[in-house]
Each structure stands twice: as structure tokens, then as C-alpha cells.
Length: 175
Image (cartoon, rainbow, N blue to C red):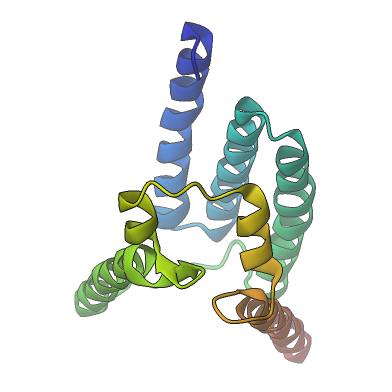
């Protein structure tokens, strides 16, 4: 990001991306929330294109903005009637949700900086030692099945998402 045009493009995408991500979480209508999530995914693809990762940007659009959002919208329409009135969440549930969210954020930041990532070294150790991490090493960590590699959690999450979709279809058929 050297030129002024790249900086202007960054802020022209980052500000709406921030607004849409907040609206995706706080919207009371689930279809609007899914639409805001679609805009967030498309904005992320623009960032990939801006950094020069054309393949990753195309995958972001094709897989996430295209395929996953279609699955989400179908799952929403199968399990929830769009015109049905939702009951207001009680204030004590909002407080518990807020507390769980904050504690999850703290744990996530702790895990990001102190859990071992590559070769048993944490992110803080890699940043303080000024080690260079290549894209090949990152890709190998995400797709490998060895120690400190993340293929098994990735596959577990994909099975969990599949089970959620099958559960949604089963619930929709019973009604």
C-alpha cells in the first residue's frame, strides 16, 4: 500500500466493512444479517485483491460469498419464517451474552499470541525474534496433520457445519 489511491481505497472499503460487520451481528432480522455478512465477505475479497492475492480473492468470492451464503440463506429460510415476530431477549440473557463474548475475546487474543503456531513457537516469539514466516509454512501449518497443524480442527468444524445444516433441514420437514 504505497500510493495514495491504495490508501483511499483501503479506507473506502474498511469503513463500510466495519459498519456492515457490526450490523451483521446487531441486526434483529436474520435475512438482513445474512445480507450484511455477504457484504463483509465481499469487502474481504476486495482486500485480498488489493494485496495482490487474486486467487485468494476469487476463492473468497466463489466459496464464501457465493456458496456458503447460499447455504446460510437456505438454512435460514428452512428453519425460520422470515415474517414471524421474534421475542425480545431478556436483559439478563443479554448480560450473560456480553460477558461470554468478552471472555471469549480475551481467550482468543491470549491464544493468538501465546499458543504455539509454527515449529512450536508462539506469535509473540516469532514477532520478537523477527523471524520471517513464509506463505509455504503457513499453508503447511493449516493443511498438515502433525503437531501444531490444523487439518483436524478444520475437518471437525466442516463436519459440525454439515450436521447443523442436516439438523435444520430435519427440523423444517417436521413442521
